[in-house]
Image 1: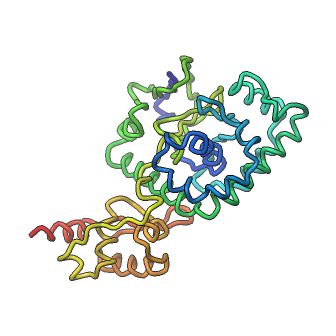
Image 2: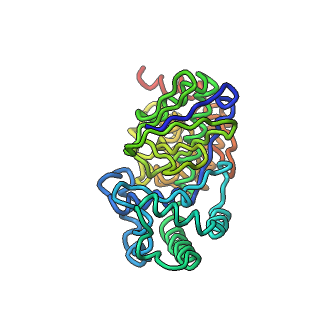
Image 3: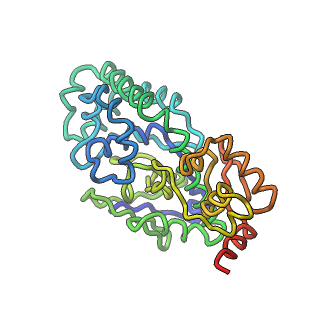
Length: 319
């Protein structure tokens, strides 16, 4: 069990972040154990040929049979706008002692593939991860990031409507909050308790954890949890046609309206419905101008959500 002790000030300083580098590292779980990540089988199918050309020996050395990865690959993001190039630069500057200590924490020793001087091993790790990024992540990152950003917007709405405690208790069945203590049930048999002490607790949504994850060592306070909305990430979703609304709005706009019970970006919606992003944007503007949707900018994305008027309109289809 991992426990973080929060003061009243710490509760008010809980924040969210997105780490592309952490997604890269955690994706090694799905690559090694695909049956445990059914929601990412679409990504695994799409990247199968590219993954065959990767430096798999190096990548395999970054994960153990318990699906742990070294803490230097899971940095605490400072915001939801973290850039992968900035994280690669920071990774290359990781002190040799920290690299060795984190590898030993995961494997019990430094794996043979990283034996010898640490600097060449670290450069090899970055090369392998960069290749994984360019071939298997970069083409799909906009839609992946859209799901992660939408999750953060949803959690923000929870905080506004019900408070931080309700949000924390809704992250995962393995995460609970009570009386200033955030408890995380992990596969790690160790019993660890850390006071936040003004260092801030960062919550990181991810596509590659089933319940909850945390640093292996005594890293910055951070919890990685499974992001919402992954079910439709890799397949074009065909929503049942609400006939009455479709007759009024048209089929595509009716589908969009029905699909926006949770925040989503035009990129994500285009993938779900099999429509180009430009066409989706045009429909979304019309629906927003009619008062059926609301929108908010989040980082580089604009997220859309069905308004109360839009919900009321959909509910009339049963009459």
